[in-house]
Length: 195
Image (cartoon, rainbow, N blue to C red; front, side, top):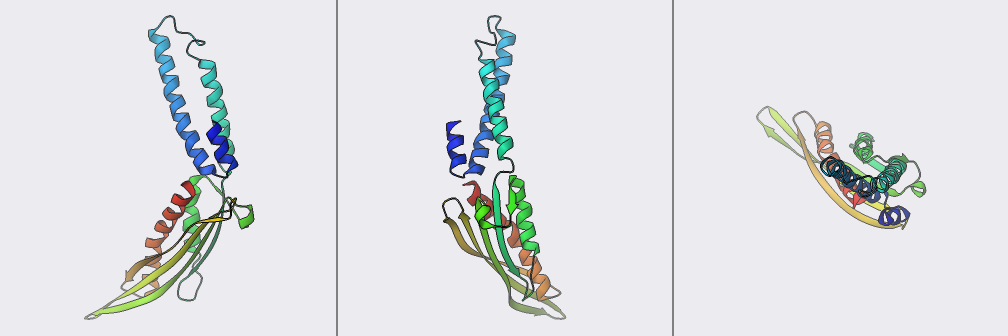
């Protein structure tokens, strides 16, 4: 429990939530073992099995888990382009994935626990003609940076690229590349926030 409080004070709310989940799983096992002991040992009672203490810890952890459920705040600055037009779908997909962590999104980096910066753009690669059919190939390049707001520390910065292809146009090939790169960006961000 002291470790959980230290993590929360340091702004490591995701790590604290993971630790709380693990502790609650252990409490469930302890409660099952307490029940089993009461069934097989006539001398076992609530006091000797520390039932009250375990229940107190369980309530404490459950309250902490509830208070942290939406306490982790994330600011996302995502500029994605699809050949000089805005592509807001990337930000929506990233938010959708990160929302599975049980976080809240804010519009100001200063009010967040984590600030995420993504800049992505599509670029034409080539067009391959096979008789009367053509295939269009596009790359999407994305720069990703993750900052821990409490410390002002940039904990991650890198660029990734993904290729997309389509038989109708460069634009559809770019949309294909965005579909492939979006979950990869989300996974990178999740790993950094949960680290």
